Length: 93
Image (tube, rainbow, N blue to C red; front, side, top):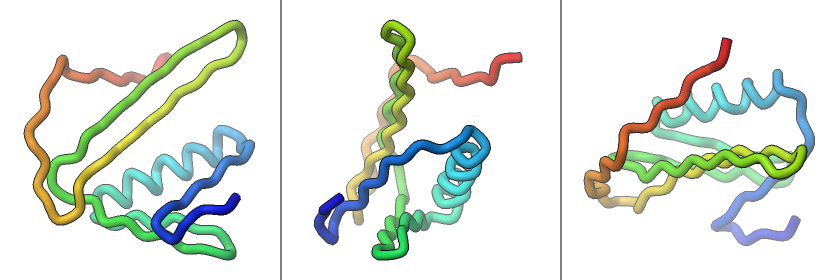
């Protein structure tokens, strides 16, 4: 997938165990303030800080399900406070 030096994209099919590993790595990256994405050919580093914008969507159409997670911020700037309805995410049991 051809992308610029300012962009990293990856798409593949993974089992839930590996997806959980990636989500944990994202959590640790946000906690430490450094996210490192990479393949054998490319390493892409981001440093989130301050307030971030969070977008989550989930949908089901026929038998296809999609969950999307977005986090965005402006480098070198503090974000504005944005508090819509409180978000709740739970694991089902």
